Length: 231
Image (cartoon, rainbow, N blue to C red):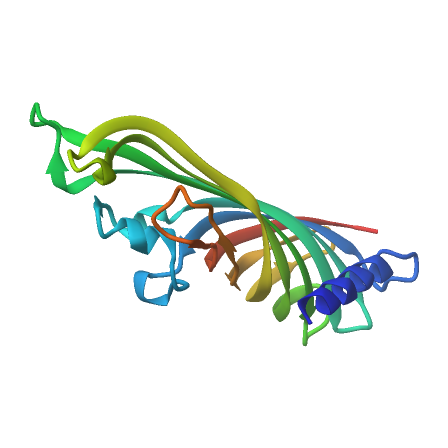
């Protein structure tokens, strides 16, 4: 079902970019923040929840800045298709909650999550695409490129002597999932500006080097938007 929806959205975007598309197209930019899903809402086996059994950090520390750009094409009067890409990255320092080194220092590591979401959406603009106030809602599919790493000092509990070693563990890939969005913008003949809230859901499998078997990539994106209209 996700594959069929993805194909349909790509076709809709392509159709809107044909010469027959109604109204001015918009190159839209967004600046704001991305907030990850909370501890109680994350996918089963999530690596961040698993790490919290040993490491001292908060899930909310992975909330961070977000930037994005999107191409919006109106069609069929009160609809528009969108295709865009975004970027967010956050590094969270952590230490072992219940263990320290023999010299009394903390056992430190950095947890880093990078997300590059590509989104295809279809929106309803009930007041049309003329000048003035334009509230909108939409749905779509996101394909997120991700990279997660843990780098620093770790404790090998399997040896029975709690040996401390340095290493870097990395996993990356892509994951698809649904998105939902809503916002409001104010449009002139050439410029638009406003705000948007977007929810995305996706998760991916990790390898055997991590405490958790999966990583939850979903969350909320809040942006201030501004764009340029052109024909």
